[in-house]
Amino acid sequence: MSAQRPEGQPARPELASPEIQFTPCGPCQHLTQAEAEANAAYDWSKATDCRVLLKRHRAAGECSAPEPV
Image (spheres, rainbow, N blue to C red):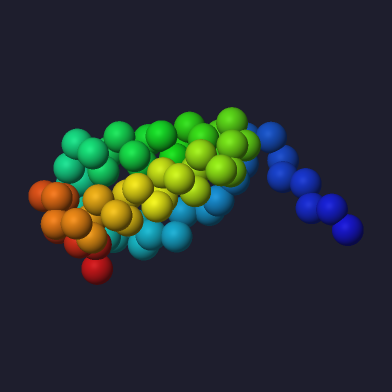
């Protein structure tokens, strides 16, 4: 059975809790936006690349934003 998503629905539901607030650094914002745009364009490969790059950025200690809890 093929699941179809109604128009206007996000490709992935937000997993973050709404009460968690943090200000991402510039590269985090850029990669998060690029991931959202890739998801909107159904470009799953690019969206995955953005998530990998974001995780590497945070793990490398380059990120100035606090880690979300």
